[in-house]
Amino acid sequence: MREGEDFLKTYPVTAVLFLINVIMFLLTEFTGEPGNTDTVLRLGASYTPYIHDGQYWRLVTSCFLHFGIGHLVNNMIALVAVGSILEVWLGHVRYFIFYMISGLAGSILTYSVELLREEKNISAGASGAIFGLIGIYAILLLKNRSRLGRGTFLRVVFGVTLAVLPGFYNKGISLTAHLGGLLAGILMGLTVKAPEKSVNSSKDSEVR
Image (cartoon, rainbow, N blue to C red; front, side, top):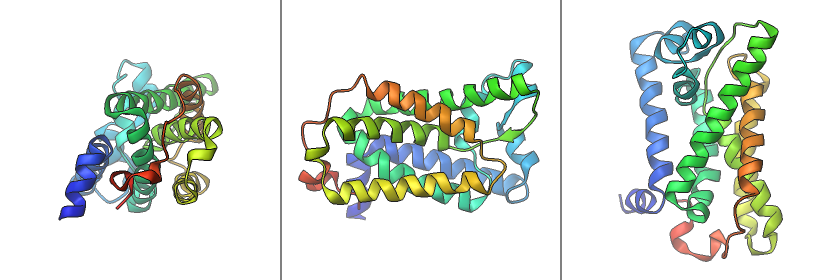
């Protein structure tokens, strides 16, 4: 219980984002068949014809929906691995804003590309937002590599790998969302000063 309380206290935004994604997944599972595309669409997945007709809220809600338990687990592990580092470095408010901008950027790029190609794919997932975090982390890593512990770097590599893999075998996961989030993250990372201390230098910033 103590470890859970410490995590919630140190990384409240990451914890809340994690819970929202899990709650939305459970809602999907209990209101339809597991991994059912129609259910995910009904709850807010991205679908170009609907967005084009004015349902712009899908650009945001799609970032909190997932196709199946594997998709959710991979993204949530990546969220904790990368997000817990950046929440300490960026601060809670800026971290949340950057997360949402990254997710929205991924959704907008996906919508724009599908509109141009006249495609009608149903897509969802937190990967766009997470790839934004990855982009921010990559820039900060380049700015201040000497202050990062080896464990921090390996943890992020592990999280990134889990975030990338589903895109190669799940058609519901949009690679354009990954790219949009990543580009947004890189641009935002350029506006951020390098962290003043290593994440591993404080016991409060350890992932538990």
